[in-house]
Image (cartoon, rainbow, N blue to C red; front, side, top):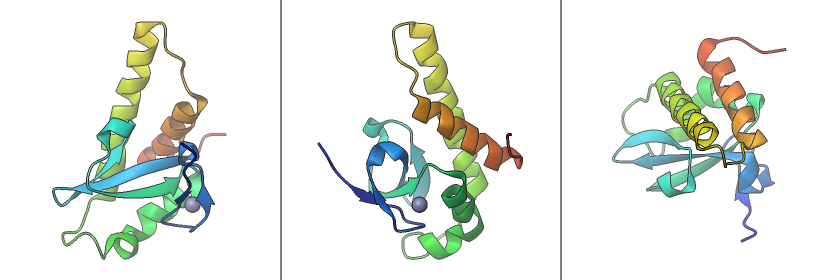
Length: 120
Ligand SMILES: [Zn+2]
């Protein structure tokens, strides 16, 4: 399927493979690491530092229409980071999976944001 999604932050249209999926389900926001984890209202955001950082800074503006309660965005991202790390190690442990460079890129971006540092 050749679907195209629009980034919630920069409004650029691209292939979902280059984007992180977020969803609002049960009133909470979460990162969908795998496609099977997409429930409820979904949002797509480019997997680059710029869009992710803007999400952290202005999430209240972007999600105002969908979230009634304020959301702890750093917590959402660090939960997503933990999930991505477990997925990454599960692939490594199985020995037959292909580690996607996209996944590693996302882990780096999320780590940078959650830990407040930038990697060289
Ligand atoms: Zn974007």
